[in-house]
Image 1 (spheres, rainbow, N blue to C red):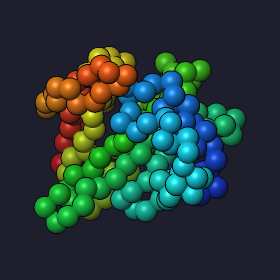
Image 2 (cartoon, rainbow, N blue to C red):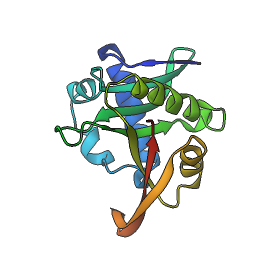
Image 3 (cartoon, rainbow, N blue to C red):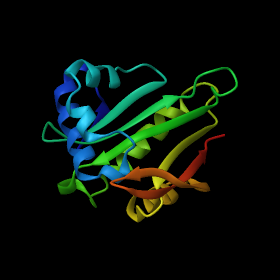
Image 4 (cartoon, rainbow, N blue to C red):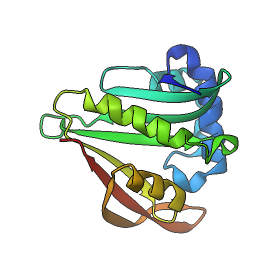
Length: 167
């Protein structure tokens, strides 16, 4: 298993995995499968453009992308102390093998190197017990719940907000 930053050369693999994630787990993401399926490859390439405080890491098994997690720093002088994890996903055949934990550890390690980042935020659908357990066991603390945060196929879903204090 190789964990590394995604590059523009990974755009097609990222697109394929991202669409699979949105189709398989529509409740887990605020992005929509149908809308993203119509987007050009350049859209996905732009999402994985690596900057020091905005990047996506991937998990590769025998050169195939099987998991991803993104990070970005909040914008503005009053918010730059916060980092955010977005769109974490592991393909079904790689789940329960520690891939999600490795992705999370890589994101956190990179966040710790960024000047002035003191905490990392993420959100998870409240009934996604596997993801929530991973985050809490990795040091994240549930700090709140937004009722009816997401609406999928006519059903409202609550979302938990989690924070990992780095400093």
